[in-house]
Image (cartoon, rainbow, N blue to C red; front, side):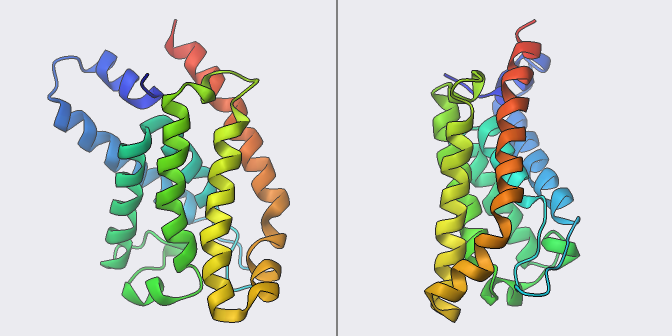
Length: 190
């Protein structure tokens, strides 16, 4: 089974080379995550800002699939590390990879892969099951993000700084993604 973005690009550009369609999808995923990272709301009690990145990561994984989604997030991280202003609020550079958000960046790649795997099985196509991939992806992001914070600050502080302040916002992002994807599939099948 395939995911939404490759289905749409194959239908829209049937004569284009597969590598070109894949490249366009990867770059589109990078741009989506980078754009939603720019809306940064710093929280005074945590070094991790509130952004739309996690929503974008869930969508990239679900629409591009496991391999393309993970590759897109790897490319996003590499380009941000090399100096493009892709990280939260336009931040960039190698130093960003050693800060408190490193675990989240690693979690983005792994979450995109697993959300993509579940989407390749069709779970994001149906309202009854569409929340499952996004819950899994969010838990992976928390595991790696808070895991890295636990190394830096200890477990209790990691939960207080990297999980609890984001639960309500991430719940909203998961529900939005779970509502958007089945509707997008219905439109694509017309």
